[in-house]
Image (cartoon, one colour):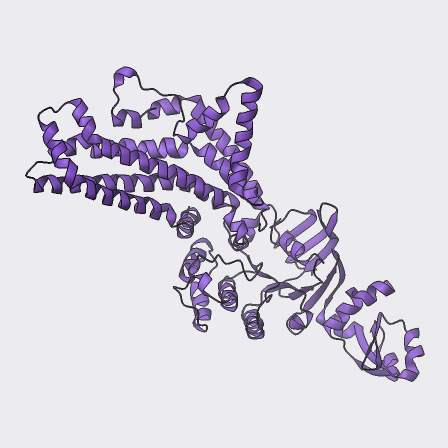
Length: 291
Length: 288
């Protein structure tokens, strides 16, 4: 049985003059997943999210929760919550005013949930946003977004400019919320390590194209990293690694769809980190080898 | 409707000067009147008491009409200032990304913003003007009482209560709704200007005016714009015989005259086109 995807993009394309931001991209996100969209600066992450959120026009087909986001943004926002940037709360607004306004215009906003989140912080209801630190503003925005019973939560670089404590709190809150409500979460970042243990799926974006889309289970099954014994270098290269690098005097090779049994005699085998896989598929090494 | 009302409320939170500025200016004017009245008013009333004519009535009414005119001017100025920043400000501080994450349409947002100069500000100016005029009357009553004089002549001459209704009509219908093409134009510019929206709002009409003057030797476009800003949405229906009292001027053109004037409806169509454009531009608006 096939289920209706939360996000279904086919041939999605967006250009700015001669610059191609999204290049005929196909993407499917099913319900209940936490998808990390990872790419270097300028890869098209924000453009993709803006298209998904109805913030920018595009060519091709795109359905989000069965709606056309560009034509039906306001209706779509009943079921989608997003943080486009941690610095978009207006400086003049009071915390209580923000809660009042969102409560008034959003039928799925549960104020008690936001207040409960804020009680665990030092943010006062009467404070204006301009009186809060950047981390506190991020907490406030997160409290508002988490209190919306949305089917899809979209976060674009949610930790940009935040210190390690706030970053950890944000991802802890995100995971708590996910386990409580099992909604679909899409988050874009170029901080690969940060989301490695949070996401269920990864999408590598490179120059407007998808370089890899896989579940974390698939990553574990299909990719192996081997610290190759010097005597086995020739044999290892015969198995066509997708990436090769040197670290601490050792050659490290990354293989795709090669059985562990064939790799084990070559050296120490392990599952690569998402960061290593990202460099292999998107980084300079991949471009040189043309993979 | 609930979203629209709360969007209006949000505009007043963001721009509290929309009501604070008229209230502040009214307070300053009142202080000035309090300083002026004890020295001048009793003498003025005493001198006029023996010759109460239409002319002397006008003389006593003058301060109230001046106050009314000043507050109208302030209202127009504030309306223009508000429109210039209304859709530019949310792009400048990136808050447009927050507002667009909520289920409020671009049309609802733009209409809420247009309602500030067309309805809310005129209503605020009306409340502050009438309150100020009443306060002036109370001050006058107290000053005259202290000099053993009655204030009935001031109350009747000032026509504050009689003109309150016509003043509300004048502010909302003429300074608000009939001037909406200009406000909608500034909103349109505010939705798109990369920076300096005031310059972008002013320069094209000025260029058209200059072009018309050079090419045709006429100033019809400039007259049209200035006329709208002055509260003119239709040709005057007053006649020389109909008197020159405040109420007559406030009701010129009358509601019937306004509704019957093609220029009024043409203005609303132009405003609708600009609003449509502003909605389309906000739809794809990115932070400035």
